[in-house]
Length: 278
Image 1 (cartoon, rainbow, N blue to C red):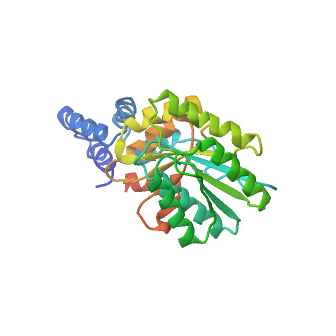
Image 2 (image 1 turned 90 degrees about the horizontal axis):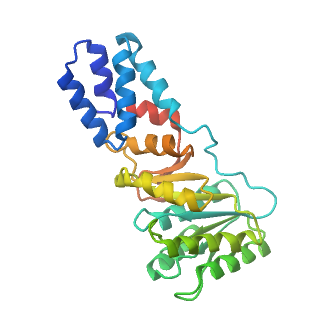
Image 3 (image 1 turned 180 degrees about the vertical axis):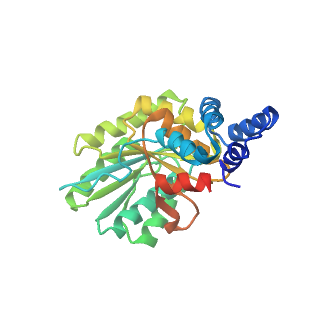
């Protein structure tokens, strides 16, 4: 059943008991929507007439979504660096390659940079994606300075007249100050040569409310422009997408729904809301 179907049915029935409301509330909290948003939504539902329930609930959750553009910043003349950040295990390296493929399919010249230099598997994974997609990948020596690699990659991209340089950074724990400082250093050295167009935070939807904490920490230390949500399931844990936009005011730009290269999709908020209601 879709995330809000039971809530709609409760309003339409006109005879929902308090015990049933409490059960619905518990189910919505389990969907990672967050207690405050759940209570707001139930308050709206209880005030709604059966015939108006769907429009009232749709209007409420739509108001939680970001009004900022969901498009990746269009390529201007010159280089457009895009930084991918997030903690380990979110699918960040794979997402970096998938966005590169998306941009390449849009006829842009793309380059990848493996700035997760302390994790050999991440470098090898990005190189493998580069070979599959026929996209050049800049790599450094193992355990080399990520900021130095980012600087050299930016320089190479400018010299090669690349439209988009996608930089895969180390999977940082948002509670580790030294690693977050390193991220800020990477940003500074790139912007000595070219302004960064996007800093996308990759979030695993299955981490639930912890994703909100991650987002707040990264936003405090970097100019995050949007999110990529991986492992998003609109019928089970999909509430985190609504919650993260409501809390941050920033847009989800892509969602990951599978492992294949084509399984990264631009996020369509209207379609997503329909999937939660129907």
